[in-house]
Amino acid sequence: MHRMHVGRILEFLIIGVILGTIEDLTAVYLVTGKFGLQILWLVLLAAVPFAIISELIVDHFKPFHTKHHRAKEREHERTGIPPKK
Picture 1 (tube, rainbow, N blue to C red):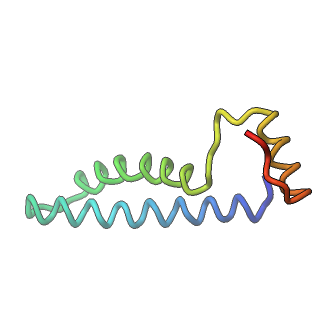
Picture 2 (picture 1 turned 45 degrees about the horizontal axis):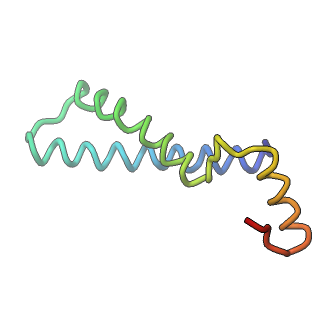
């Protein structure tokens, strides 16, 4: 992975964790009227996985992409001709 690509992933991940935490803390406080370290810990536990999942979606993670599909995409990028289905 390129250095710039890793930096972009980390940037989105950190922003996702921060914004997710703020959003969840706001919701918990508005519903319960409570705030504490225990609540912060639970909110962070919830925010991190969702930030990771959203980062994978934003980064167009394709776990089932085969060699054939990648070759077709490279050919399309090289020639500009869309692949046949």
